[in-house]
Structures are given as C-alpha cells and as structure tokens.
Length: 201
Image 1 (cartoon, rainbow, N blue to C red):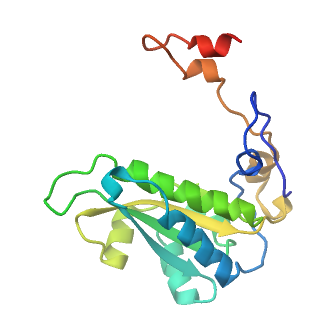
Image 2 (image 1 turned 45 degrees about the vertical axis):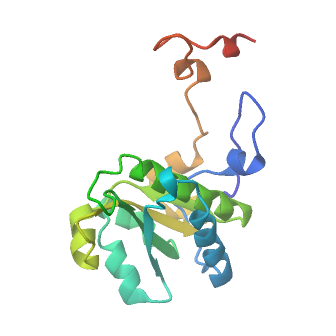
C-alpha cells in the first residue's frame, strides 16, 4: 500500500494529495542523505520573528540503544507499530524567549517545520506519522530537556510497508479512504460559522 491519493475539491500539489500517515513501515533504512534533507527542509520553515523554536532528537535503528530509548517514551499501543519505523524523531518546542516571555506561536512554528519535513519526505517516497501518544515527562527526563522547552510530538519516518503486518483494527484504518471535513465547515466570512461566499461557486 504505497498510494492513498486525497480526493480534493480543488487542485492541490501532488505532494499534498499523496501525503498520509501510515503505520506499516518497510524493513528498509532511510538513507542518511535523505534524512539530512528532511532536517534541512525543516530548518527553512517560517517562524514568528524568525525565532526558529524547533529542536529535534533523532534516533535510527542503526543505533539500537538510542532508538529504543526514544521508542520507550511512546505509549504501549504506539510502540506496537512504531517499532517498525527505521527513524524516530522527537520534536521539541522552545516555548519561552530569552527574556522569559511565553512564545504562544512555538507549537504552531514547530508544526510548520514538521510539515516542511514531511513534504520533503513525500518527495522521496518516504512517509511520516506524527504521534501525540507519548510521555512528555519521560522524554524530558531521558533527554534532560530544559524547562523553557516542551516535547511536542514524536514522528516516525520510513518507506511504506505491508498493511498485513498490522493488527486487524489497525489494518482496517490503514486501508480506509482518507476523509476531511468540507471547506464550508471551517472557512468563514463576516462572522463565526458563516460559510464564506468563496465556496458558493
């Protein structure tokens, strides 16, 4: 299962149509030069005041000790499938500036950096799955993350694998069609909940 193209209402770039978040990964390492390109793509994301509040802790199966340490921060359910991905990345947001003020855009900007990373991955035929189910306190302790930073998400990266390797429930989700809310449910004009006339065409 390597392709699940989004059925869009309007034309979008093929990278956006083909990007999705699998749980089945192939037993094939991510080449170092490609991994570095993913991180370079993240580096060039936009951010508020150009603060660039992202940091990434990277673990690959080439270093089993580090890989298993990062894997251990995931909840048990996610460990069950994420352990097959060749790359794990912990994304961390710097939530306070040097003068101690809260950066309310930090998580937004980390998300932008990850989207750059994910679209670059898509261009290589790689896939990524962002994980909310992990223990941020455990990650903070394991990696001695400073107080001004917050672990945001863990990302699995790799080549797509065989859905048959997943449990029945996950396999069904893996093979299901991709769905999104229609634009009229979240694109407004004039006041909240008032669908934009742009969508009346």
